Length: 203
Image 1 (tube, rainbow, N blue to C red):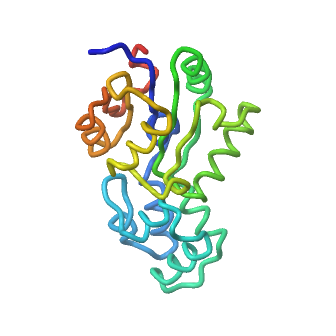
Image 2 (image 1 turned 90 degrees about the vertical axis):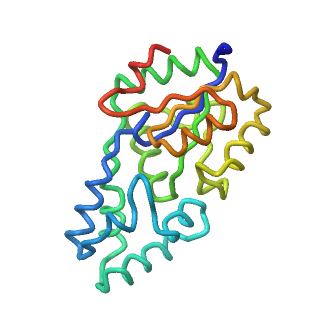
């Protein structure tokens, strides 16, 4: 095993505490009882993956949710239910992340969307007074890239842009299919599973 020089962090479930069930419950209360079938950690309707690739606007997202439930939900109701899965950044993990950014070449790669991005960016700034993106050499977001994990092209675009040696990368993610693809490509990987936290990896 080669020395780790670069770390690519996932966001949700690694740096940001999340709970998909909170959003499932919130949408159930708004009249969409099968939301967990449409969107979860392991599978998502193509509409949601397109949203995470930036192919769907925020307003189109709101309209789609209203069509799914057949009810007149406000944009705010939908936004709050969608963001319900986002819990926050524990203070001790923020400090740990600052330390890691000094120790390794740190990058972020997240399958996310503009609504979630706006939420966690503001929360991090409010909590720390710092821009979350500045914790990394570069933060990569699927909705900006037009690519999402586990597509090999998404990983390769980061590797090519940053001129990284795959064998010197540690990729940390909480979703197995993303880990599996990164490993196939020659990266070192850690599949982070709760209740273990990223701070317990001994980096």
